[in-house]
Length: 485
Image (tube, rainbow, N blue to C red):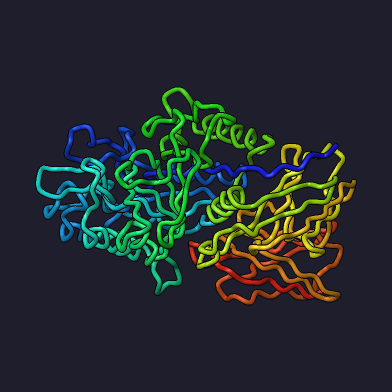
């Protein structure tokens, strides 16, 4: 008998991309904790992250430190951002390699998210003194002045702009944030919190270890989370893959991990003294396949989908009353979810045999937007759910479904609408990749209603329409693809 499950999402959040140097100066009490590697970082270190993301079919959340990317040498005007304070001098780091690195990051937004981590990772309130850490004083369990926090954000923006990542060039501020060394000022009921400030700039999602900020009275559940003003914050833990350990996977068994987010740092994905980069990446690929093969977990496609699934898991009730007939009750979803945070897909998975597919699936009689198969499971991607009740119907057969998206991209497929002569696919798209539609109808014309999503070409063969799309904004573009048959 085919068994349907409502899995928890899985994702890693990768801290500390962006450093030019790897050497750790944190232990001396004055400098920053970088990557902990006794070498300079290279372009190949970015390519290794993207290679993993492409092999497992996800958009990895990269969290960037930009202080050593400053090509204008201006951070001395904001002394709390670096250990050199007013004497900041970045001359040793300024080179064409910085440009090469950031151009590469911009070119791979389909599989690597450009997220906010910090400017210098720590906070230097006065000469010769360093506090942990940049976004909240965890040493004294006390917030930094709001003006200082805003200045750090503005510094991050100014360095982004040096590489063409600007509003003027059509790029939004990062949507994802992880505080350095868990320095999150959680204060959802106050006028000032980290969420109140970062939300103004465009941050929507954050994750941190809540247990590190007890004075803020954060959620206490292991897999807890909630809204801090406009920002949805989720708990995360480290499971043995320490921040400065190259090629290190989590030690805690997947079934014993209470949080959906897994804390990782850049070195965890990179080669070490005994293993090549290929070997380390292969270990991580195997790990991701184990997640997909698990009944109760699955690999979230991207950050928005990760947070959406967490919310659905917390507030939505499903009940398969008979095989292929599922009642979905989403009436308890909080109103704040729909105030600028409209959820992405809900994901369900069904165990299938080698010769089986989900041949048809509808939600309230409308076709679901997307479908995929991996590791012996069929993955059903439902549309964004309103706070109401739904009926999902699905059939197990020997043929693939038609009229929906084969979801091997990292975007969000929000809705698919089919008429006699047209198919409309509503998407949130990241970078340069293919949208694959399962259809028996060859198209005559394909258009995008958003100039920020360019159609680079398309082909049709054996019931699959492949459309190459490129989204301009690094944080993704929302639009509709109109397919005229």
